[in-house]
Image (cartoon, rainbow, N blue to C red; front, top):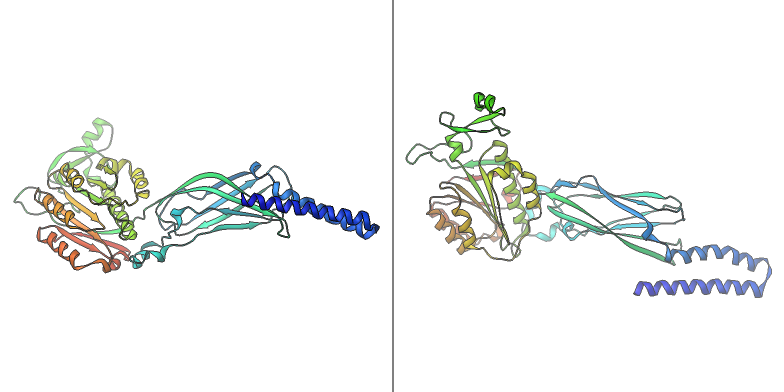
Length: 423
């Protein structure tokens, strides 16, 4: 309303100025008076048109060099404007409104060196450029988006404004043109160390995930990329007309479940949640390439479970889900944790990734340890938050034969993350 009133005031002032020039030419007469009137009249008429210029007739399109990228990447955003007339415009300012989700900048693994100082990574991004189209009917403007953070980023509004060369009048218009960009969590290189496990109770331990036993064949299954050439069952392949590989006893029994808890993280360190999500995705990506049995269970405001088959065949959908995952204010739900774990096969290694540690969670994990599950906890936090109480709870878990690994700034800034589930 205020802008409309200012526009009307400017129009009235211009009309008065034209009237004054006309009156001066009529009463004064002579060449100079009429020269001034005819010289300024086209300029003043042009300035009168500017506030009513029909921007809504413009065709504005937004395109990006990529709609699906990983965190920390760069994308070029291009805005193309087409208009129907060649009405001269001295300048056009194009501004893309930055989504709130883009206030954070992701500088790669180095972002974790200031995990306790979140303000270091916030940036007031401004996407604004001035063009001088004059009589052109089509023109483009591009913006470079660097250090993209994880998430789904919704672009909705483009602001276009113009004015006269003297800055007396102006006009602006907001164009709603929606588009979305999905930024997946970054995938880190993982150095994997798992505790040894035996196939049968009382037998010698064998490494579950690095080497497979090739002397105990339990069946056949369809080929998964990453299987060895020597595992192919040629007779079954010829009979079924599809590539089939042997399934070994260890492969059948070995199972890893990732349990990601994202509850109650708004009050803590948001950067720790980013590390937890990147760690979960990196482990899945590595295990998926090896064809290992793996499941993912996410406990946030809503439960989400991904089976081993979904991880193999629907991996992009999992990336999409993790890209949009946000913390909530709910506390850890012990009942949901117990309900999730109880459906896993006995002997499953449950890797629990947490960013917040409390006594209720500790008691729940200890209770599950008694039900013949192998439990490992990866606690992502800042060194400043490693209080005596946290250290006491970690020691309590270790005394219950639960592996606990803490990952702080010095671990997260490394190029290769080390995940250990050994005592």
